[in-house]
Structures are given as structure tokens and as C-alpha cells.
Length: 479
Image (cartoon, rainbow, N blue to C red; front, top):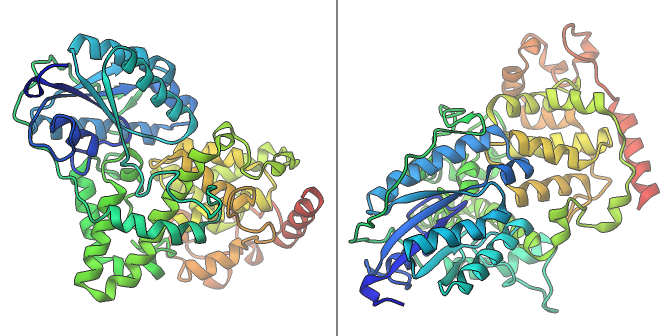
């Protein structure tokens, strides 16, 4: 180990693409201590593992947003005199050797990185730590993707909590304590003498400009979006978040997925707004509970490896004889089911890489309950389209809707798509926008246009009453 003043530390960025509230970066810059002031020379790296990403279902929208976020990170790091190097490691299995090779060439003293929790990511991180430690390099792992570290919220029997409400009760106090600390961007005085090659603008045939007009990337864009949300829309979040025609949600999910904003920054912003504007307190608490759901699904992924293998959380549900109905699956994917609220949701997803959260539940429950198609088909399709594709949240949400997961909706909860549309898009603004062929349908028939004999729009692929009765019988017979 060299003298502290001559330390060279390597920061490995993954889905934590920011410089503010980044404990690994701060610790590396401080000579190994968080909050340090320029005690070490710092080099940053990012591994391009496109083969692995694709095997995990990453779609073009998510890949393009990731590329833009990496480019934005490089610019942020340049202001700190930190070079960002790309490491080619097509699969996670190749990452340990690639990072060990880079660390050896750079003669680094320490490697700092933020832990991730799905099984493949954990195995990769553990292998990196073991490989570099064997080479005599100190490895320091940090927590920054969650507000409370997995394993720190347990039942009285010291087992993972698998129901959200008791999890939330135990999660809230340590989450609030975590938010009382801060981790600003570090001050770095030294310039690492490392050659930096230009970052690619396209990977695997996907150009970084895909979706750029809809999804500005980088932590500056995330900070602006966060500030606008908490200052002007957080007070009505509890009601507006369920109405897809309104800007009721934060739209920060893509930034949280790549880490251009941290969950701590989000919670701190909501807490500050609630203190300054008491009318915002209820909305702030509701939004914080959504951040808790995000943590919850990460804790599940960390504690139960089988969900990362594609199994149902409730293993007895693996035996459900889901229907093989490729034409119906294709109709659902294309937004041609004959149910306007479902179809509008799917068309929004296909056109923008994003779907409103209420609609994610409606679309998922339609596929799994009305059509009795395996939830894994929907999980894969969402991952292939979502700009905010995230394994833990996507898997948890699909299993909740399919009644196969932790804290899942009971099997007899089956959304009526027409009722959901009438309730959450009463004026039809959202539905008519995505289904222009229904623009002139009277409000009375908008969510059941077949009753009005509308031409040019599909008839329902299954009748709701029949589908409900079939689903109830299906689950009763196989549970």
C-alpha cells in the first residue's frame, strides 16, 4: 500500500450513474473514508456487458437511456478531474478478470463499488471482490441503491419480511435515519494521468438518441425533474398518481433504475417539502411508501434466490397450468384486445417505453387473470420495452398481479378493465389519445365499444364475466 497522499482508487460504476450522494465515489476520493476531501487520485470505470444485459431482457429503450446516462456521468466526472474508462466484459462472468486486469494496469490501491441485489449481480460482485482481494487490492463495498440494506429489516424471528405493511413499519425508522446524513459530490484535487477513449454512441445496434426527446438522461435532468415534482405536484400525489391522463407521478423511475438519482435524494426532497409546506405531507408520505415498495422488492430479490431463476415466489404456484395462447398474447402485446383501457396502456408502452403504474397493474392482471397466460410472458415483454426496466420491481409487480408472489393480490381480485377505465380515465382523455379510432365514441360506450357496434376496433378477445369465472375456477383447482 502506498502512502495516503499517493493513493489511487478505482470506482466501478454500475446502475449508480451520478456523482452526488454516491458513497463509493466519496469514499474513494477521500482516501477510503466517506466525505474525505481529495485524499486520493480517483479513476472511474463502467463495464459494458451487453450480452448479459440482453440475456436479462434489457430492451432498446433501456439500453439507449443507459448509454445517455453514462455519457452524462462522464461529463460530471470530468468536472471532478476523474476519467471514466470503459471495460469490455460482454458477460458478468468476464467482469472479475477484466476489472482485475484494469486495476493491475492502473496500479490501484482500492476498488469501491455499490452493491446490487439480484442473484447474477450478487454473484458478479462477490467474484469481483474475491478476485481483486486475491491480487492484494482492498475492496470496499457500499450501500446506495436502497434506503435500508437488505437483511436489516427482519421479523421477530430474524427472517425476511414478505408482507409489505409490516416491512414498511420496520423500514421507516432506519430509512429516515439514513436520510439524516448526506453525501455530496467529492472534491478531487488530482488529475489521474490515464488515457480515456471516447464513449460509444451506439451499442448492439442501439443509438443513444433513441427516446432522447422523451427521456432526458443524467443527474442534472433527474434533479430538475425531482425538484419540479416535489415542489408542484407532490401535494396531489395520493389522488393524481392513479389517473394516467394527469402528470401525477414523478416520472423518475428511469433515473432510479440507472441511478442518476438516489432513493435517498428522493426521500430527502419529499421530507423537506413536507416540512416547508404542511399541505404536502400526506402526498410526501404516500410517495415515500412507493420508495419503500422499491426497497421491499430488492430485499425479496436479495433473500430469495429462486425469484431470479424465473420461479414464482410462492413455489407451489409454479405448477399452475397456464394457457398457451400465442394469438391472444400477441393481441395483448399489440394493444388489440378489444378492451380500450388495456389497449391504450399497451400502446403507450410500445410508443414511449413507459407505462403508467396503475395501467401496469391493469395490463398485467388482464394477461394473467383474463387470459390465464403465464406472468413470465408479460414480465419478459415489459422488460423488453420499458425504459425503466428493473428486475426486482418488474418481477415483484408481475407476481403481485398474478397472485404468485410475495404480498400478492388475492387470486380472486380480478380487475374489470371497463370499470378501471371508467374510474381512472372518466373523461376518456388518456384512452382517446392512444386509441384515436375511438375518438368519437360516446362516453357511455368508450370502455365497452362493442356494445355500440363500433367499427374498426377489435371485439373483446374474451368476455369479462366468463374470464372472471374461468380464473376463479383455475386458481381454486390448482391451489
